[in-house]
Image (cartoon, helix red, strand yellow):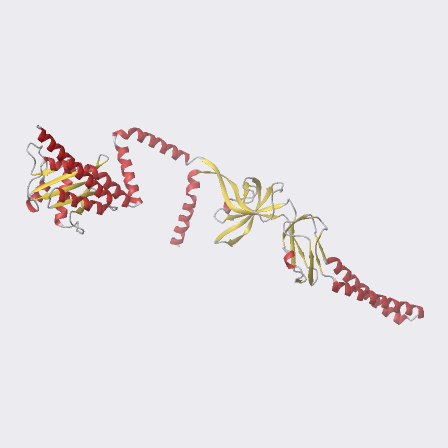
Length: 466
């Protein structure tokens, strides 16, 4: 080859490489798969002076035309699209490009579908494969009526297909849903496992499956988890002894109190006046009684003696009311309800609950067990409690008894289970909430994983059958 021939070859190779890069850029520039495929078909049609270029993609077991050159809309169910798809399938089945009329000295190939295209729509047809990671994903079919495809043109088509096939495959996968992607991944995995190279993987997978199946029937500790709350072992309310007004409050919720400590006081001005009145009446009746006694007037003596006794009783009642106006703690404990400092001067009625006390460091645990699990709970079972206020600490408890009355709250139905907490109570307060886990024996992993679903299905079947 002379100097002129060498320069011409280099110039042609550079031009071809530039065209290939432009086609790759065109495919990359378009965001969607269909737009990129249509742009590729149009670019190849213009570059090689074709009458029509089609891009096909494997869908299931056969090809489907997804783009035509210079055609924004087309129907893949048309006869011409079906003939092109048949030509693509023919090339895919032979795993090689098919050119008709064939080049001189080429290996004979099956080209019946291509011959049908040549006989009806074109004089020359070339189909090249789109391959991604060694796996055919589609094909390009080029048609024209003027001249057959040269070796250089078919090589250019194959190079273009090799460059753009991974890009088109990536765009196609990006537009598919997660279900289709998962199905493809599972299909690829199954293909690899079924191949001779996947023998070791099959052995490992089979061993893992047998081990998992055996583990499903191994009994493990089963725990019933449920919301829980702390309450005082005994709760005592402090009520207003008489009608009156709140004058003084010495405690607030959360305060520790001692037995006999004054918690609050009611206003006693009216009672003080009533006491003076009753004392005066008592003194008056005693004086009359003494005068009658001096006169030996037995009638007045009996009458005033009775009136004096009545006045004494009324005075004693007032004294008792004055004493009860001071609300005292009945035992050592903690105030859990009653924010009275916000109600100073407010009127109170006799019997109105003002404060609620609970013994300090003595609690009972109430566990809200779902009605589906209450049948597994029995007296004497042990469990552990984690509280939201102290999540780093776990407290042991014993089930005392399940309460037989169901409670409906927060959209669910549950039974309250009483538990005895084994704790010193230094960091606990009534009203704390958390999560309790009750040990309900040992159950197989398969039962733990499926019993909820099976119970629901059993109930649903019973409802339908009824």
